[in-house]
Image (cartoon, rainbow, N blue to C red; front, side):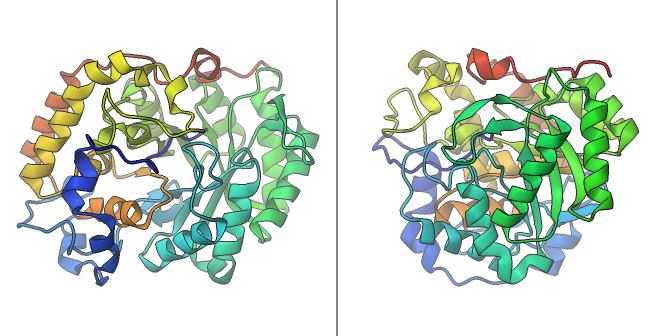
Amino acid sequence: MHEQDSTPNSNPTDRGRRGFLMGAAGLAATSVVAGSAQAQAASSATGVRGPAGPRNPVTASVTQTGRRRLGSLKVSSIGLGTQTMPGNLYGPVTSRKDMVALVRTAVDQGVTFFDTAEAYGPFESERIVGEALRPVRDKVVIATKFGWDINPDTGAVTGLSSRPEHIRRVVDGMLKRLRTDHIDLLYQHRVDPTVPIEDVADTVKDLVRQGKVLHWGLSEPGLQTVRRAHAILPLTAIQNEYSTLWRGPEQNVLPLCEELGIGFVCWAPLGMGFTTGAMSPYFQFAEGDFRPVFPRNSRDNLAANMPLVQLLQDWAVRKGATPAQIDLAWLLAQKPWIVPIPSTTRLSHLLENIGAEEVRFTPAELQELNTAVAAITIHGDRLPPEALAMTGVEAPPR
């Protein structure tokens, strides 16, 4: 499951991205120019960038030029998550046609990394991605995920399943929905506590031999499961939640990725919209929005966590950016093999998100920001209890 940054409902108390960008219409009308080679060259191997001059967040370049490596897989430095595009997580979207158009616009703006899953919709997100990317299939990287037992007719989810025969069957369905003959990056969405990870890895290895899958990864896995899976078939990426709002991976997961040479993909890089400044204790969630069930999104916890939003807003003013861009740029600066995948259903947010690569921190600034973020206590669990119980799970022995 991905939590994402799309926030379809507005609120008169919203500060952050809407006020800072002076409206979506102005941004959408801005002509697009390529990012400068000078800005790209300023990126160092550590992800810390040199000082930048004044920049206008509305008129600055919104064409993404940065590239990163997840293992041997080369992707844009910021990808696009598509979990919210079916319109059943953060409330309804404008139309399916608009979502296809948004994915194609992302390609035009330099995004090459697109993340989906069979569970999103279910199935509809993969269909949107497949339709949108078919004309440029050889120029983009598509990641999707298996691991749930989903009725192909009704869409009902009855639990987890990573049985080898199930994986083979669902991958064939993915290929049809994605309108492709291969999946660039295939994740196990959640570790199945009833199936040894060696059986999963062996199955994916067979799919690699067949050319149906090129790379593989795990989402929210246990640490020993990562080591066992990597020993059978080297992992390209681990996908976990990570942002200034949730820094859990820093303790064990990121060091493990660095040790094994595995890339790291951040879902919920904007804290389900919280770090954009769009949410507050008075925020009214739209009908059908699933975020109220998350403990950290209770009114009391939203109020208690507002110091983080204030910090990001202060840095946004300081750097001539938006709070969302500060959060994404902070992620990019942590490690050169970290790639955030914010999801959105709005053009203005897409352009804002990819513009984060233009935000640069000096080493001193990054240390200052890291220290300030670490000093803030975050209140409330990141997921409901039943979902939290599915994270960090160790697969059973073979």
